Amino acid sequence: MMKKALIAVSISLLLGGCGDATNSSGSEKAGSVIKQSSVSEQLDTIYNDYFEQNLKLNPLLATYIGDKRYNDQLPNYLSKQHIAKQRDLNQRFLEKISGINVEQLSRSQRISYDIFKRKLELELEGLKYPEHLIPINQFYNLAGRLAMLGSGESAQPFNTVQDYENWALRMEQIPRLFEQAIANMKEGVEKNIVQPRVLIEKAIPQITAHIDENVENTLFWAPITNLSESVTESEAKQLQQRYKQVLSDTVMPAYKKLATYLKEEYLPHTRTESFGIGQLPGGDAWYQHRIEANTSTQLSADRIHKIGKDEVARIHSEMRDIMEEIEFDGNLAQFFDFMTNDPQFIYESREAMVEDYRSLRSTVDERVSQLFDIFPKADYEVRKVEEFREQSASSGSYQSAPVDGSRPAIFYLNTYDLGSRPNWAKTALFLHEAAPGHHFQISIQQELEDLPEFRKYGRETAYTEGWGLYSEALGYDLGLYDDPYQRFGQLAAELWRSIRLVVDTGIHSKGWTRQEVLDYMYANAPVAEARAVSEAERFMALPGQALAYKVGELKISELRRRAEDKLGDKFDIKEFHRVVLEDGAVPLVILEQKVRRWIAERL
Image (cartoon, rainbow, N blue to C red):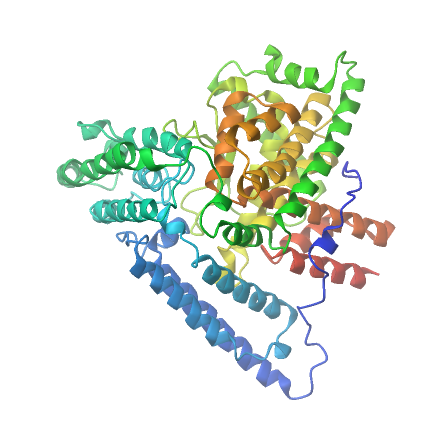
């Protein structure tokens, strides 16, 4: 059984009930089969048309999912014209589905319909807010994102001469995008919509790290250094000349201009007293939208803040049980200090850390079939976070594999400041980012043959991150937490997600300062300064995103307990996990309907 105390707060109530919106059509009138088929085909056409038009409008998305048709394009997606096109696209397709008779849809068709409608409505709502006026932060830095694409280690392919030419054409479009970012930030300064100063201070060195008079020293030159074997010697010389010219004449000046603007003009106007979007014009509604988009609930910031504090108290109690088990002499704060600073928990080198995580894989691979009968086809690898972004990156992250299988998925492991990456965090972090966490859920979703394309590559953050956090606790079922220190690591990871509920709402709704956030972290969790700082600044940069983990995990854990209680001996953990995963990512309310229906069928 998964080690989990009963949660006092019912997320069912917080979701506002769970009426069955995914009505089954099993009792439709005779003769409706033709109509249903017609409606089904009509919806499939709508979904496909939307997906194709959205990819054309957002070619970077196409590249990341392995669609190579637009690999030479980099539209000015920060411009008002592009935003208007996105708004028009969503509005047109929302109108297209408004005439659909949902009563004629099967259960699975209704799930897709509801998700599609909600997606368009949320995106349209999001476009009302001036996100484009704050386009640069240290976590999702568009300059760093482009550098990663150009490194040859990300989604942009470098296998053929045409691949190299595609990227050269994309690089030539970088200045327009950066100039738009600068124009937007200037407008933001006029409207008092600017980033906190600390975020821009972290973003500037990320950008300058890619600037070098000798372009052969930059990350962009790596594909030339590692030329594909399919490239001939004469083609190689042409590519070297082409890249040297584009990098010297186009890319480097663009990066310099962006860095100079941020440092000399934008930085003096950034915020030093407030850090959340709640303090910006229209910020309260903006943040509430981010809550809904990330949690798929109507929870208020105050309610989430309270849930977080309750969970922190519960987890502290379980940590005290571990203190008794290992006979630790001291209070919880002293235990945190011991777990954070004792040398036995610190890796000797970056390489040792990566190898330790890689070695855990074989153990997980051997045992995971105890809990699952559904597996991804895609492979994955463990890789270090690149040094240019490691100071602001999270402890771990996952990048899915393209559907063509041209490369494996990647579990990025942050090895920066080993003192802040204790070895007791290993099991929980691996289970979350790799298997059976993000790798299982995201890869299985992308491999579902009957799923509309917009759902294969869609993300429901509360479901996706909730599954990742739930997967951490599966280590109990897999026998991976016999060591009390690894068990502490699981509790510490869960505690961290609970703290996120408190501090994210604190920053963006209650006006907490950066120092108030750090003080709360230090008082309630075993965390070294480097991680506390990067996490606090992450919350500033990504309003509401950190809420998804715990809200989603609470729901999935609650549904498992419900199934175990109702089904008793009939409960099958493999069946439960299949039910959760088999339709891909869904809003939490739809997930609850799916599980309740499964329980009723099993009974």
